[in-house]
Length: 49
Image (tube, rainbow, N blue to C red; front, side):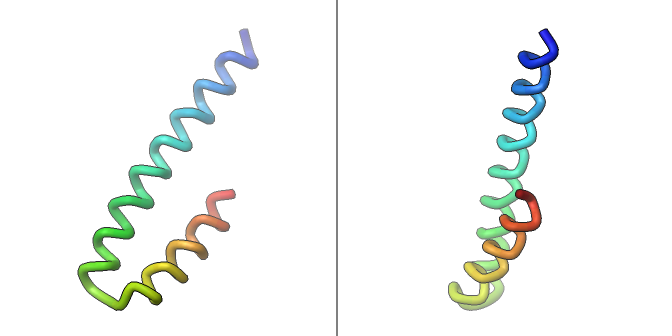
């Protein structure tokens, strides 16, 4: 039971972070160059993991 709960929570977290990444990427792409957006995305991604 605990492991099911834990995996559900991690699934939820990954779904949230994916949504956040997408939103963040869209915002960054609209405002700045793609290269800058990609490096920022990588930084955020490593911070999440």
